[in-house]
Length: 178
Image 1 (tube, rainbow, N blue to C red):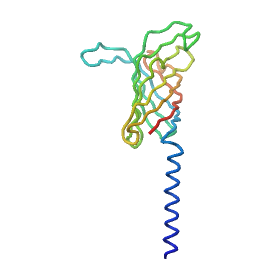
Image 2 (cartoon, rainbow, N blue to C red):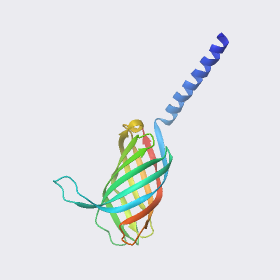
Image 3 (cartoon, one colour):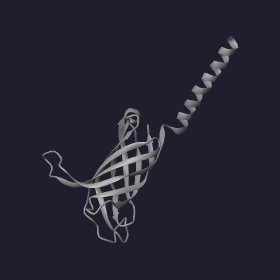
């Protein structure tokens, strides 16, 4: 019986020390590596009374990969269109973004919050990808208090004749720190 207890104790200590070493090795860093798809639509936001309505975009995303499958909603406020040649899109016209806010919801109902890094979001009008670099600013549940950076790169394609609805596919990669 004592030998059995000793073996159980050694196994328990080994498992515990392995998880401590694993946590230390990663330093609380979690990689984000998602394939994403969804829709983007042009909308008009009507903010609180002190602000006039603004044209913006609403993006719904399904994300598959690490650290788990999730859905996300993004709202964005575009700036003025830049004629070609543009800083990020070369021979294509560019729409820079002034603001983007994102909420990612995981299957366990934990959430991740992110906002656009100033000057780090744009859509190229044509075949080039759209790129948004976001700062992670917290979350709920498993992601409460996290920080980090995410880069969302996607291609869009008009999904009808109105120009209001677009289909998007791409990636979201980065790292969050607990």
